[in-house]
Image (cartoon, rainbow, N blue to C red):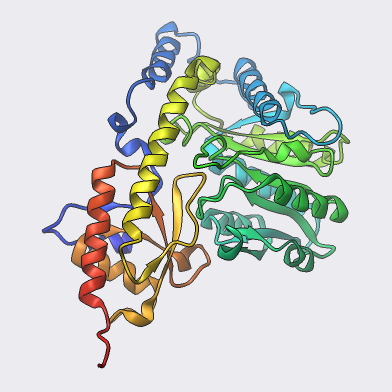
Length: 402
């Protein structure tokens, strides 16, 4: 991304569709966020939260996250098996979802020498780096555009062996924008049950669904296999810079006892999230903020539609399915029809040089000759970005010989 930013055309204002930061345009998402900032102001003014918080997080904040997660599962109406068991002590507060996934992979990694993790492709590149740091091999199962980005369960089974430590599921999905069906999640839960391994459920975009999509938490299937759910305030609450995340262990049969012990040791070593943010979390997660979330989701759907419709006018770009969740879509680039463009990285570089539109090359996240586009910005900028991409592609279009 730094290399691409260095190639920006100085004569045109940068439009970034490459980085998923919804807080770049705070006024775009309207009112309601002041509830969150007021809660933080109150905790700072009180002077009660200037000391070190407990290693696993302030008890009221852990309780608020646990209550929120329980309500999401209950609200989905999709709970399978025995009742959901999630105690406050099953929740660990972290410096964003990044620390949550790093901690999770670090404690799972030593379980089996030469262990491996099953990751989705395309996926989130931070998992690759975290696996390297944890000494864990990456094995990739494919998300299929022809199946609305759901995977082939048989491929997941074939990839697994006796050294497989966990399956990662990102839902709603970054980068494809898919919201996985309950049936598909059940298939993955059955695989994890048969392999006797946990599922790492990355639900950072949990609740951000639209266009007929439905968010079904992986914890609904905790009776099949242990679930480690990763979440944060970053996207749904539009405050990524606050760096507040969590992981929650759903383990009704206590099969992850040693993993939990290792996680507690890790959390005692590593610093947690800011104490004043933790203290504000009960107010931030309150049901009183539902109107804000509904407004944001409606706006995101409008943004998605704007970008999706704009792409339909660009002959060499193809988006196979309308996103139903997260803030991203994957778009295939027909490089054979563009002069001087051999791959997705060439496309991204030349687009920046000529039009100052930043996109994420798909090869970075495991899918060559695709690009990932972020649509969490004002619709006028999305329309302008489409116009610029269209102009670029028309200039580079290979002309028919006849």
